[in-house]
Length: 228
Image 1 (spheres, rainbow, N blue to C red):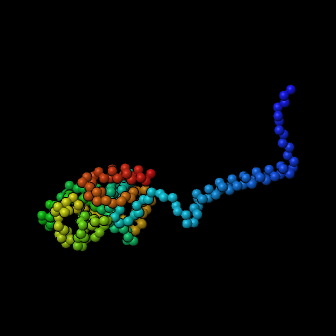
Image 2: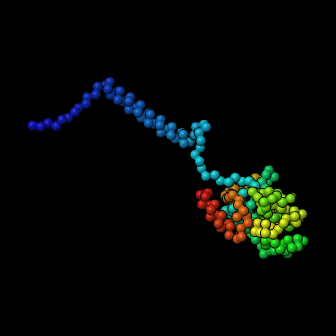
């Protein structure tokens, strides 16, 4: 008659106590490991390098603002703005994509033949519409001009404008604006936190686009794809 082999373990009280202690120790180490992982994720060790994350441009002179889709202010809806000043006194910029039908020849007759070489007038913003500003791309610094970004300068005096050697060297790289956009200190930061704007790096391709009426549609697609 065959008998199945059965192994019976008989634990005495001392063995049971040892197994219980071993089990508790193992569970304690396992729980400690889990806890350390969670703490490390929430509170990185001092001096530890944070994981690299895609950075967003900071608000500063020389960056571009892209109006969010929900910004309904008629002055800035679907606008693309180059920041030309950013300091403790506030922020100023020029809207790049609001071209008018006004020609420089009619608006600036005092420039004579120079005006014929300028592009149609753009509305730079709702502030001081009786003031003219120019963005100029130049390898050399125009006398009296203020640098904005890279080799792009802003000109806001008639004397400096008359000194520009307009022609082939500036063809397609000079824009005339009437008025500008302005924010009091802290105002633009509040609008950014509210989600009214996206910040984008400025390039000469954007600033002097041949089709400025299209650049908001192109940039809002890129900006929302990057920030979401």
